[in-house]
Image (cartoon, rainbow over all chains, first blue to last red; front, side, top):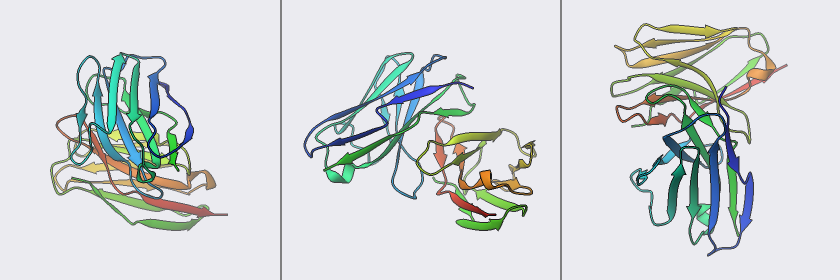
Length: 116
Length: 109
């Protein structure tokens, strides 16, 4: 199956700092990637859709100035959590779809962010 | 809108069967099923694209009733490796997948 790699796997940072998470599709080109957030024992909540070469589209309630998404190439999307606060601590997971429309999602390994 | 999954949690003994249901108040264009182990990313199980479609792999299968806007995942003769949280996801017209709250499955030896 297709491989999506996410980095870092975990990060601990101080309140007020920014953290960047990378998501790469290793063996296919992904024009669209999705960023999810998951709190312990809860569901995967879609945060935003990352589109190569254009602006990301954010779900309702997600602050686009706080969660900056850049889809620089067909294989790389980044999520930057700016001025992180303890309530931003969560498990962030990216995913990509190989086919243009429809089809299964391939998930990255996830990045666990802890903000002190 | 988030699909509704039931039950929220299931405890089974190895070898027993389980059914997990997923329903939506709005039209379901397709249904995705994933399993997530603790601390890991979700892993794809299967997609159902058409009403009436049924799919399976080994002892895990699923059905999709488009009219009733629901899907069910069947786990037969469960194994210890089936433990985890199962999520159904509905694909919207805009190609996004919205997941249900999940069903935690725990298999006892």
